[in-house]
Image 1 (cartoon, rainbow over the protein chains, first blue to last red):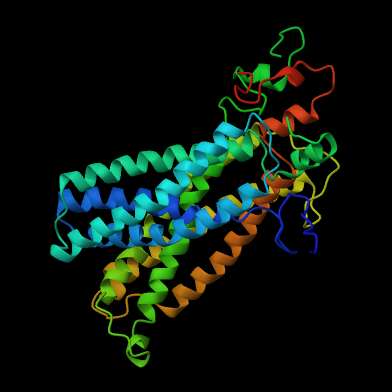
Image 2 (image 1 turned 90 degrees about the vertical axis):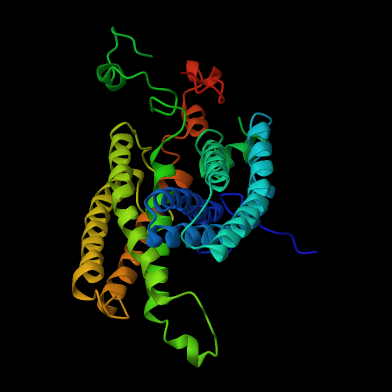
Length: 169
Length: 210
């Protein structure tokens, strides 16, 4: 077996990729989910077709993106410079991340069914569910931001320190 | 820390700053960039798909999406991106103003932390201007110049969008260097960099010593 050399960020990527890929892939989940639900609300109450088009296609984009986001998220979590204090945050981020991938597939199927039946009409249960998912996405974003900016996962100075000490703070 | 006998920038500001040099637990700017980048890239992507819609026949695809639908996404997403970016830039500048970049280390591109921060700050303002101009241009195509045309976007607009994507890549990489290489506003990094006798060394990473 060849040994895998991790770079200065504790990641297995070849040059020129240095820092994590997961934080890039999540752009397309976070922004698209939030702006899908926002435009669905506007479109539903103003009866505007173009807003409802944005609602559907942004959700479809988010659903495709979440699969990629979970893939890189799980990969990079596996190589994270670990510490005891980060564990609960990373655990929740993992559980919610996998859950969101299933939730977004279900939400997109539901949204797609409503669109197939009548592209100009949504219903209150769907909009309520959308709002709840937006809340979950926000919480997940805060957890992910904490992993980098509080605990320093894949952050070079913290990786260096944890390699020297055999554990990060 | 906020000792009046030893005035600091932090005490002069009158803000209750944490270990990360911010008045809150995690920086807000990195959460807002998700919206700027995500909305803009998806906007250009859908306008590109709309412009290339004619190809579907040659590919033997029978899509029932409707060309104007794709242009709806292109327009509303870039308009949203431009609006969001005002907030992204405001928080970016607030957090730059509170940062003390580390000295003497270099990014993978060979820039120091201060140089990276300066370029990211100026780059952010330029990108805000570009996104606003692109949105106005896109709005004119949609509501005036190409209102009745089947293809709502000009090729020159898509080219400008692609160039802006390139600018955004460099801007994003500079931001990533500030995060992953320099650890600016990073709680764990600030604790590591504090001198051995500093009270920061006893800080709990979870509470950010606020």
